Image (cartoon, rainbow, N blue to C red):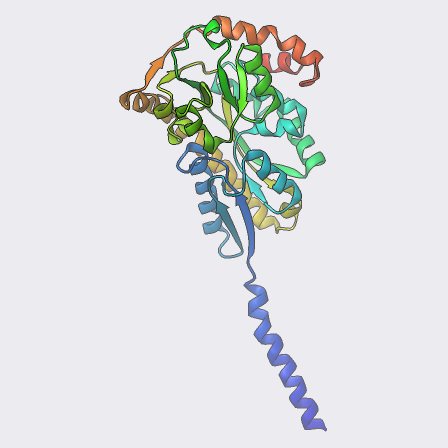
Amino acid sequence: MRSIKSLSTIAVVGLSMLLLPAAASAQKTLTFGGSDAIGSLLDRQNVLFTKLVNERAAGKLKINFIQGEQLGNDQQVIEQMIAGSVHIYGDVLDWYANWVKDFAIMGWGFTFRDVAHLQKFTESAPYQKLADELRAKQGIRILAASATQPRVMFANKPITKLDDISGIKMRVPEIKVYVKLWETLGARPSRLAWAEVFLGLKNGVVDAAEGPVSAAFSAKFHEAAKHVIRTDHIYSSAHITINEKAYQELSPELQQILVAAAKEAVDWARDQSAKETEEVMSKMAAAGATVHKVDITAIQARSQQAVADMEKDGAWSPGLWKAIQEIK
């Protein structure tokens, strides 16, 4: 009996020793849902983030980055992140206006004077309040954020003044404030998935579209609509977020790796965008597009005149637009 008992003990101990290395080497995998054109600025930012984390986590954590719109458009990916089936997302902050209304201010035309102004906003108390609300209400933590490129127009005809926008069928993202902005400017907003915009422009489904310079270039908007208009109506942001529950399940070491990699990636996107904007505009011109520098005075005035009505209608909190203008 003793020998049988001893053999059983040895077998249990042996099995435990076999299982220990497997447990010790268990790797956590997080799914990163992409939504940008492959090769675009924010896609490259997200590739960099993935690379940094996978290198620095030393096998303890793996980021599985699914590029393009394989999991759906931005709104659908964010919904999956809230549900927990996607863990990480990185694009522009404006999308969160569908869940935290004050993020809508980032998608209102001419709210920010330039990239530096937007960058200061992402480092301000009003911005931190939005980030805290997003985490508390939707379980989404912003790991890092930065400012990047202006958004410009692509059209099948020259746009040189406010009146030229009147009546055009304009593709806009599925963000309420974007729709309202272009209605305010006289356009007829139309919703198409980002991946469908090229054909929509080429086949006349829409007359015009808009987007960040590098992302639109990667999607070849300039080949489908030969007029590129430097409205610079919105300055885009870059960010990387994570599902809060997934974040809290990680060790402090891995959390620190994620935060550091996210900051490094969005800072790269900011610096790279400064180099790329004019370079990409030149490439569009070289490819046959006509780049128009439009007098935005009337367009900007129309946008700013509507701010009071937007606040009255509850688009964002009263006084937020003014507070942003006071950031120097």
